Image 1 (cartoon, one colour):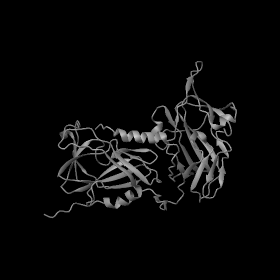
Image 2: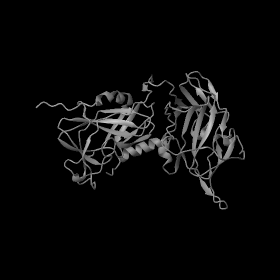
Image 3: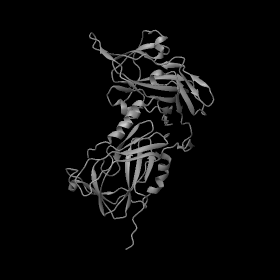
Image 4: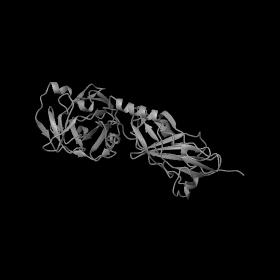
Length: 395
């Protein structure tokens, strides 16, 4: 069913995203072969799209990049950088949700890793044209400061070699380039850093928390481990939707044998974090032996940086459509929404359900809902509340 958003809330979230002055780190602490990821930006530091012209002779588009502090100190080097490594545009890329939206702003995300005994800052850059002039990566000011010890780890080199230079980039418009800055390895005790000297990615002292604890431990109140994918009792499909029409309840799907739970306040939530998805179970109460529900659609989770995590699916039930559930009055059961994965270092999250469109049914209602600053630790602790509890009746 098509849904209308709560416009004020979404505008606020959008403004918070655009106004975000710093990159919020989202450490994931996962291993990919010999690569260990320490942190990544939220992807929501945005630059305005630079002015673009087209060369009449070659037909190539040319973007003139903005001034940085270095423009006053360094003359253009004449260096032309070509064949920069590219990365695939997929959901593993920081800022993916903004990369897929063409507009007047472009994200400038980054990722900090350990590779082959060095610390590597990956600076991702989507080409706004075939040629980008007057670009800058870093110089001797590039460093990682350990905020606890006061030791700074200085940039050693870049890939491609553009260290200490204003340069020109040649590539395919729309491709995502992977500029790398190499630093010495960080000690295992380093957890709180600041990154300097990379102005185009707004890294001028950006403070970053690294997730360096072994899996299963707790750091600063955040559970540093992933959950297993939760298992729920699967309902039985009684009637499959045919020619679905939100205004005709005879066309809605119908289910029975839901995942029953012990009585807990309606709307109580639990959360499971996995690398691929976030699962949110919601306590749902039956007042009748047959009731209709609607879940999913444009429901989102929003973190404090303004990053949105969309609802991808509803487990076992239709996503963004109305449907019937059979049961008994006083039944409590779990409705499970599946969202994009959350980073492990988040402490709170806001849950937003936009208001649904009107439809024809008795007591028709698909109300909007906002639950702000939910504790992720408490949500994960609630997992035990959603164990399957078969119905018990005395007649």
